[in-house]
Length: 314
Ligand code: FAQ
Image (cartoon, rainbow, N blue to C red; front, side, top):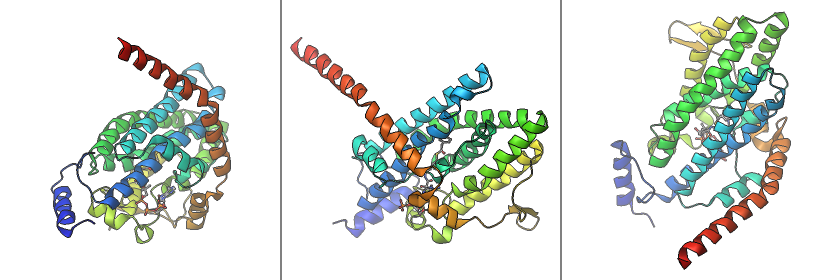
């Protein structure tokens, strides 16, 4: 049973901007919320490799291929930092991965959309990594130390990712021929709204926000971060000469922000429930990769045991 005194002391500790470390006392629900969010984040990085992985063999040049390959590998690294951060809270990786495979753990809705043209690589880097950075820069100040430190490292890499995506968009939308401009606009039309959905439900419908903001797990609300992303991205789209697929989007002089149209929450909820265009395919691919990799895990364990036995015998 957690005493009110311990809970109050914890609250004061996080309010004073102290970091909570793995061995510190923490409320059971704080631990549970962190495992939920960090695991969802880790799964997103790993499943997030799939839409772009689809284009590695079809990149238009050797330069583009090597850049995309490195980017996708970086996402795997982010997944590993995050699984490690989650393990510091006392859950093991096999449990987390199993929860993803059986549909118990969520991952970001964005990775359930198909990548149908090369311009999607530009749109993902620019918009999806761009949205991820807005969210993750805020999370650098999260109250849990291992998560916060993972975010600092991840953000450095994500900013490269965002720039490589924008550079693809410059080549296609600004410097490209008519067909390339059309391809860039089509990718933008398909990725704009799902990118806004990445920030989660509106604040009024976000059950986890109030407590997690109080504990400083989250530092900004879903709507605050979404607005920040819109304000940052609209001028970038204008520079590219792209049309924002939202007839309600307009600058609001009074608020100093862009107003934008209503997100299709029915679509968002369907995708989160597992009924997006690619949900089944994504999980099936992950499960197959995991099963196909069983021999690698077994070999690594056998090697570690052999080394340990040698060391113990010496
Ligand atoms: N998709 O109460 P809230 C990346 C769920 S990384 C699916 O507002 P919360 C890098 C939510 O889990 C992208 N589910 O939840 C990359 C909750 O469900 P539960 C991932 C969503 O946690 C780039 C329920 O709805 N980033 O992209 C989504 O306070 C390119 C109620 O929502 C992170 O995970 C969604 N979009 O706020 C990789 C960042 N939104 O568990 C490859 C860390 C909400 O109660 C290529 N996470 N849900 O059943 C966060 O900041 C937060 O968890 C939010 C959601 C903001 C995502």
